[in-house]
Length: 217
Image (cartoon, rainbow, N blue to C red; front, side):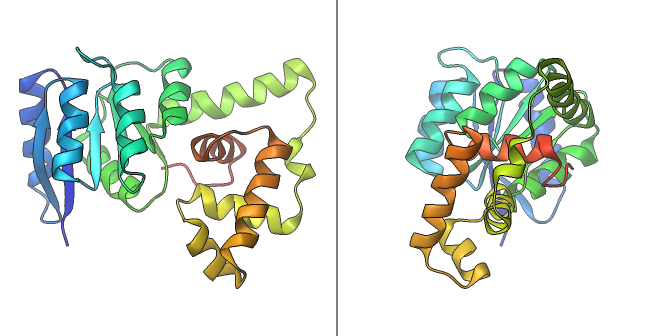
């Protein structure tokens, strides 16, 4: 089945270019285009795409808030941010809103295609510049603050669960992979978040990326 995509950007020319690039692929289908964040939320509800390719800076409602509202209404959708900004503040905000990937607008066409397919599979995707920023900033903070490695607080099973969650698997899928009940996985998830001071699945993904637990694409 095709990957169904909603494009959300306030520049019509850019949307047209993105549509052309994506629809040249036999497995990718653009089902709609939104010109502002509010329209993106409404169209995501109406069309139920697999992926929303979302700009950060849009009128009516910015891409960060639009991402949050879309995923609150349908957690099965995935959001890929397409932005000109390479500032970590934007990256962290959209990840906390639930986005799975962050691609810079000056990326090559094949990188966009790879990003859509990767995010659709449940894995995170970051432009190389963004990946280096996230990992480099994390290591610098550890050096500056002399922080201990909280990852060492996790049990071997909790580390398994952390990676599977960061790879986009649901509690039910993690439970099946580890031959335990979903309730047990929920308990592990709660302990992981408590030990690492994390507050959402998006923060788990960000932590896993920074630690190199999940592969950067």
